[in-house]
Image (tube, rainbow, N blue to C red; front, side, top):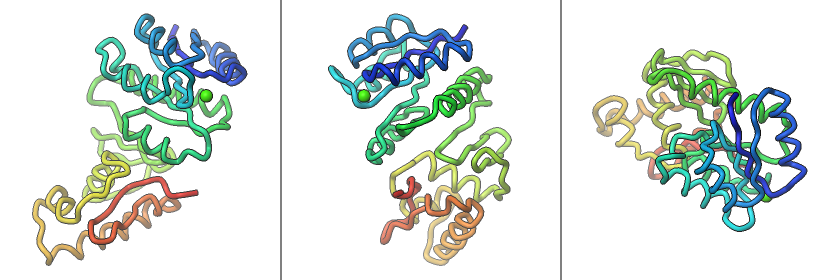
Length: 227
Ligand code: CA
């Protein structure tokens, strides 16, 4: 039986999550503050952790950093829970390396689906592991791209570009760096190529084209659009 640790100080949310996960066949542990959360995680080494960011004692980021620094917990997948207004939290959470995040209020079913997806992914043999960023998913082995869970056609170049941006989520990427990495060269003559590809890529990832931001004077960045 797979074991899930819920670190959440709001008792009714913790209970609701716990109830649904137990019903889905998971063993559930709960901690109601950050320090207890760290301690249980290190001692019990659950298969997955649902980690609220706003916690008394030690906030979710601090707990997350501690778990990532410790060899006993470094590989445990973490889903972060954030409050709706905290867009920065979500970006920081993904940059810090959380496997996923959910914004409150969320449905227990949504959380269950995310948990199942992550646990399935971490069961896959090495090399099969794919990469997910917001609505985008990459199967690096098969070079397949999925948009909102549905297969979508990208050329190899578009796939490489998109993956490069997603793996550097939230950080602006320099035009020349993009050209060098994807095409192997960077000179003014090929600058247009980059813009043409980006334009096409934005169209292909409709309705999520706004995730690719133009950063004036720098290049491009992948980020979740402001709601
Ligand atoms: Ca909280």
